[in-house]
Image 1 (tube, rainbow, N blue to C red):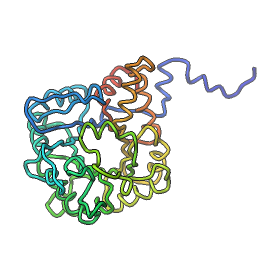
Image 2: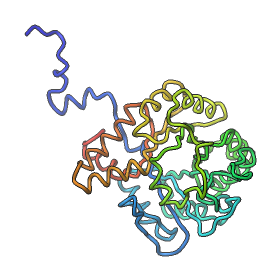
Image 3: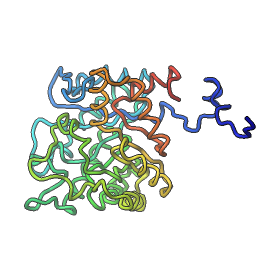
Image 4: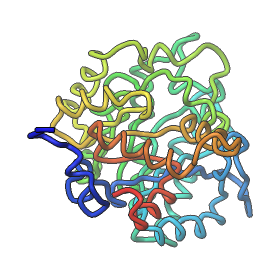
Length: 327
């Protein structure tokens, strides 16, 4: 047959396939989300996220060393306090759980890059991401507390802060607080495009952060909307975000791509707890190959345009990259 174009020519063997690969991934782009809680000598598995744990501060070191040894150089910490109140005061307390965790992580693994999730839902008695006025979150009153939270995390040792609350104006408020206290070089990775998603269920169990009433749909985004996604990202860049994030990842590749094409800063994608739990459940039932699915999901996010990939599979992905299964 007289064919000029034969795409299969470039698929003939593994060396050639890797040579012409359009998307290349690297361990340096991985971030691992980690849960820390009050108490001592605690490493408790999260039932809805097999293989993931809540650690007390004194039990963090082994996991941090494992991550670093695998080549994962960045960790995002989520704090789970013992006590909660209406103002979420544990989020910005000098001796709060996540502040203590940053101090410990900085001591035991000084070369790790530490990122602080900035939100209040884990710390408020009502489970919402800010201060309430009646049954609604008061956006503008919440900004001051988010800024205090970000500043306290940086003072405790965080290298970067990542506001996930979805309040309007939070990036600007945090930037002013950091700059005003001399932290002009601390970057902000904004959860710019964060949808009100059913994929978050296992996280809410892990962090004890489910809202006591209502939902977060008045501040997290409607997943039907496309243009709203890149508008949110552009607003955060204007306010000073150094990196913008799309969350979740797996079902939102189209929006990762749209955001990537419109902003001039790096784009992160967060493969969330529900994505992890689905893979684990299907693999345990024998329906899928966990390693292959995990790798394919990661590559799909990079292919869509992600520069950074936040995943509970970060350590396993790093090992797959070493083995040449993805790369």
